[in-house]
Length: 362
Image (cartoon, rainbow, N blue to C red; front, side, top):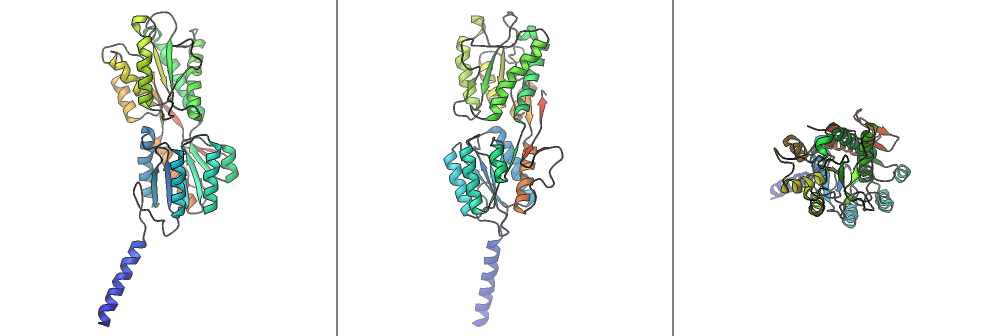
């Protein structure tokens, strides 16, 4: 009897120890903190963003390879939900928070996240959606993103050069001026602001330097020279709805057709393209309205290949995932956050890594 009891106790100890070991997480993954204290909690502003979906896939792969124990959280566009998720992760023992902040540019939200992390002894790396340099440097936190202005400048130059090279074709009504529409993804997001501003201004600079008129916004009476996704989600649906409304009034029959589309991202560009196709444009053998976006998603690359989209600016999803993972692993191990960082990425001071953009037109 004693021998049987000893065997049962030994088996129970083995089972208990096996249950304490932590593997890699991911969505719905390991909900318990790693035994080594290296658990990483990753907070996404929404899973529905197409570009961020590619970042998430790349980051899951990178964190698996790095041997990190992690879990993804989807805020689904709600800052309140994300804040609650952060509380949950910290209570579970997370030591590194990787944050794609919902309310981009909100200093109060950033401070709240950093205060919660500090109280729990956790480190924070923000990524993709802009946060304040002053707040992050004061807290010793880090950020992985892009040069806010670079994508806008690249898109604007691409637009200007393409329009200049094909001016007579783009100028459908032959009035010597190119009528355009701009789709803005989020009113407060720094990337959206820069892409909206420089996507138009830099295109104008190319055109005027060559003796051509600046672009003309399709609605001369508009107080703002863009159409906004009011939900701040940079969605194809928002651009699609706007484009349907616009084309009902501004079309070839009325001799005021929009001749150019500039969008803050590929999703909005593709939403506009769908409406153009439904109205007979941007199809093989038909009239093509030039459409430009940012991200170089797979869908955008396919659209460029088929000829329904003109160009985009590549935002490196794999590079962003790699940089975030490097920092998260370093923070989990108590190392300098930028140790072992890929030299292709731009280090800004002691707080930031920028992933470079590149033009893409097929």
